[in-house]
Length: 80
Image 1 (cartoon, rainbow, N blue to C red):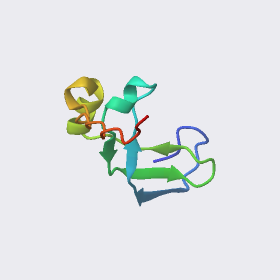
Image 2 (cartoon, helix red, strand yellow; image 1 turned 180 degrees about the horizontal axis):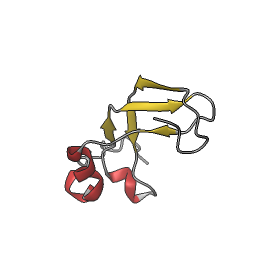
Image 3 (cartoon, rainbow, N blue to C red; image 1 turned 30 degrees about the vertical axis):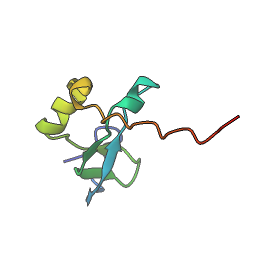
Image 4 (spheres, one colour; image 1 turned 180 degrees about the vertical axis):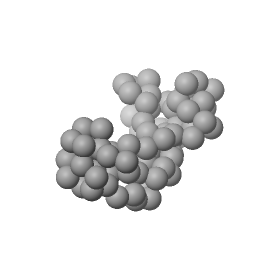
């Protein structure tokens, strides 16, 4: 299969670990989505392609369903 960007046949497949973060400050409340796709990289132009599995796609579609647990604030040790 040739590269969709430069038509090169010089592509290689690699394993990977990708942590997808939700955008903005609100995204900090959501857990990151970890995926471990196989990457197909054109070693001539750098175009990279991969597929995200359905379970992880669901987490990306509905981020509010997978929020991080709220951490309690530690008691203040500051006294006046």
